[in-house]
Length: 309
Image (tube, rainbow, N blue to C red; front, side, top):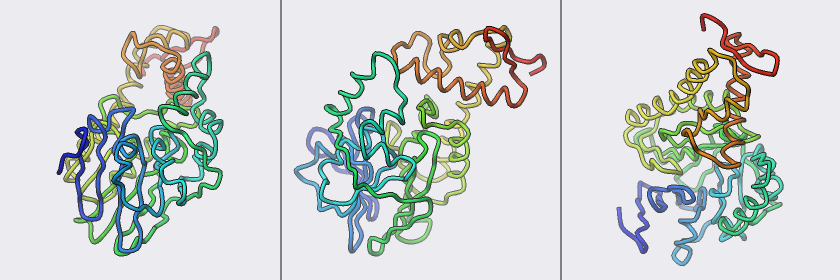
């Protein structure tokens, strides 16, 4: 690993160059990768750390996006002359800012400020000609392949990428926003899905690879056993939220009371975005718990855990 200007770190693993962001990719930054084959070079999730390196980037032939959130597209404008790719479920967020805002589902007085931040701080540039990939698509760069692994939940089109240049001992997985943090999975956007996130986590358990990289916070994991331990801890946050919600609903509460209690964020966390995310996340848990019969909806409406649950 070598230190570059302004304390940006880089690491080469076979044909993969990890472009670490500040503080291991802490938001608003992230960890991008360059994948170089004999014929092509691909950049995945060009972010603010890529912008900071713009004077020393190699020639790039394609841009891949794990999904259409602003921090994953903030360096894409540097590659306006090459094709951009994203899963079809997230295409609207790359094609227009209105499309991205619809994916987020941001409501209330904070929306204009959020739009402005995406345009300025994150250099948002729409690309109506963006192309799509699908689960299982493989791109041969010349002795190196990138396989698309559709891992929805965070967004409908969220994808991970498997970089392969040999056997499992030389395989690298870019996880995007499956971040493995103590915060846990994020499924609070209008386009998110709790059940899809759980399915994606389960799918990753069966991928054989040596290296695993998150876009934010945790960074690089090696070997696979270490990754699996963190994946288990990460997935367990979903069950923790649901258990705490059931305990809270031993007495009936309204949705506003559930949101104010905070199950995703820490108690006291405030802001329009946090309110929206907390509400959507808990709505998804409530829908599942009501389908299973663990929670009932009372007049008001209020929600109550069924005795014995």
